[in-house]
Amino acid sequence: MSVTFGSVGDIISVCLLVKDLVTALDKARGSKAEYQAAIRDLWILERVLLEIELITKQHGSEATPELRSLWETANQAMLLVTASITLLDVNRKEMDDKFDEAKRINDTANSAQDATLESIKYRIELANQNIEAGNSVLGKFIEALRLKWLRQLGSELKS
Image: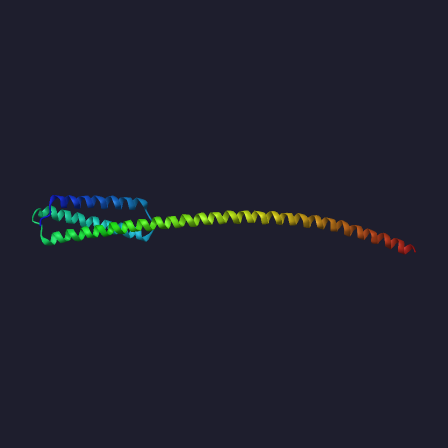
């Protein structure tokens, strides 16, 4: 079975697809190790596919069974990598959704806590005002008691 022009075209298409995928992932600059590993794997796959294309062009219609099996292996590797990338993308979307939900819950809890803290702060300020008013009244009462005692002392000394 010889490698047809369609097969060479397929290899070129796959190379272009891999290159575009690598470029897109590289631009995203994901910090996750999985994405960085996927980018490395895609660069390797792209290089392998380019080498296969070069060998195919050199041998033309004289494709050997080894070359055909190499093509099949590369094609399967490309499919596996594509599936892995798709799975990583699905997992990333799920993680983003979970993160967004957790952030929403956290924001709601923070709003409720802020409202509770404002209420507590208001009550503490009110309690401090009441304590200050009570201290003022108590101070006046003590002052009045001292003066009364002093007047009584004077009347007791006269008698």
